[in-house]
Image (cartoon, rainbow, N blue to C red):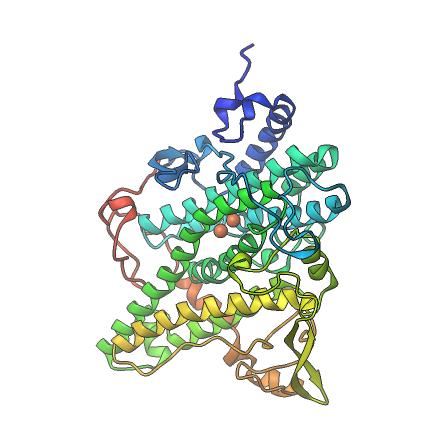
Length: 475
Ligand SMILES: [Fe+2]
Ligand SMILES: [Fe+2]
């Protein structure tokens, strides 16, 4: 029997060949991963060649290689950003100590929980998106979907590397469990709410990659500040891939908006029925999808007041977005932050210790970043000389987590009664008719350079290739 050299089978820059125990652990995990990919990964791709980007190093000069690859032969590698020898713990009670290269014993359980929670989102989104390949609006989009999928798979590998390398037997058990939970499964669901919803159509996919992958960006940015250096280096490299996922979302929605605006101007109407009859997605429907994905995603940041968030920060495990660029004491003991609460039927602002509000701090950073892209979407509408504008709903709208859960708040931020909510819900969140209409537009477009009627082509192809390039060769 041939011994399989996993140090070559698994591209890596972590010296896998020299760490036999780790190599054995990953060698043991790999077949379970491939099983999972085969059963829960993208549907109907077994024999197709796809023009994909593969990470081949962590060098900023050229970490990616583009070529045709069968998804089953995709080489999921393990890459950490280069080590900075003088790196320190940059916040919390260990501020100024050298960054940890091993897991501090007292923080083991919390670190494992942070890594597992992040790791769980990666395969979840692959599961959520697994049917979308059957209805891609073009080969270009199909290729982007698969690119996102294989990279989410690689992000799972990144977290599984940390679990196997630093957490011994319970790390190995967690790595197995990551392959056993299933998005939306009643008995063994994924850990976080938004990762158990379905992503049934391409509008949902683009909204998901715009909003929910951006949650990923902010979580990864907070972990990239970690005093546990291997986690910081792992997540920093994941962020280079994440940027493309958000690009897919932002440009996807933008292209849908542009097509809708073209038809609005051609037909000189903003009547949703007429636009739907012309086969494009009316702007109010886009706004309802936006409201849904935005509100579900901001729940992912957790409760507005959280002693866990304070503990993770104090102990140097999870920092703030751009922690080291901020001009403060990086310990936050005497700082306050504003969160929302309800009193006597009104939403009020309330000051709480900042350490307990770090989930809210990260959520607000996310909101600022999200709003910027919506401004770019609105420019597409403005450039078409149309008056409609998209906007994010109020932070308290449709929340399920934290102090704002269980109340009824309109997108404009008015606390409303249950009956008012029920009367207007159909204007605020996607209805089953909306979803059925969007679903009715979905259908695979597989001619190179051709795009579905409800979306315009992108400005550029992938890696300098033309739009007519055969991004997927069906087998
Ligand atoms: Fe990811
Ligand atoms: Fe992502």
